[in-house]
Length: 261
Image 1 (tube, rainbow, N blue to C red):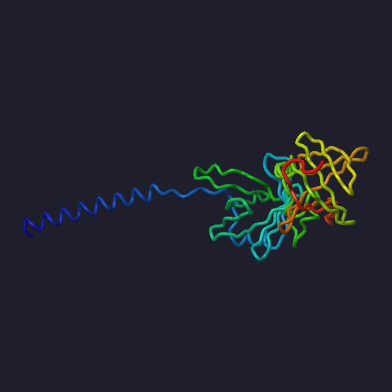
Image 2 (image 1 turned 180 degrees about the vertical axis):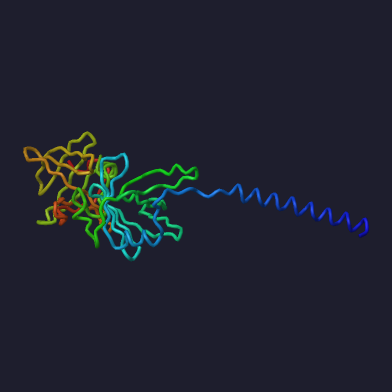
């Protein structure tokens, strides 16, 4: 072997050694996330939730949530009567992914611990965050039966939105039963004035923490209803325990300030 060939062989071996060392370091540095024992596979999760109503208790909060995982990939969540729609799927790596309307996509692992199924958010350091426990699995859609509150109509407005919509506005409304038209001024101080059929009457209004619009007209008993945005219209509904909520009023015009004398 000539001196030139000998030097070429040494250089080739050195380069290969460096490449091998870097590759080994990269592989060694890529550590896998340690998952808890009992983590479910994709097929097990599908079998557990698909086409079922699933009740869950949220960690650290005194409230329940109920889900319906439709076979078509549609998801419905109910919490304190409030409904929210979305989608769901199970990834091949065993993550249950949900995306509710107006929220981001979340992918979680489900772990069977004893007789319980628990949901965790996966963390790289292995300290996975426990979020909720699934407490009941029922075939078919049974949201109304499992909710701890009557299901509210989809489009029911939250408290802040109701206050912003009515406060300081003159609102024209028509009753669903008799078609009676009224103009009502909702004073920001909680008082109101209403004109109907040429007569005027006075009262008070407020919006509760659970988003009920409450009116107390003169000596009459206070009545509380939900306000719903439905097909581009604003309506008032009487909430009934059986879920067959009764449409009572439709709101037609909102005018800033008091528009009648």
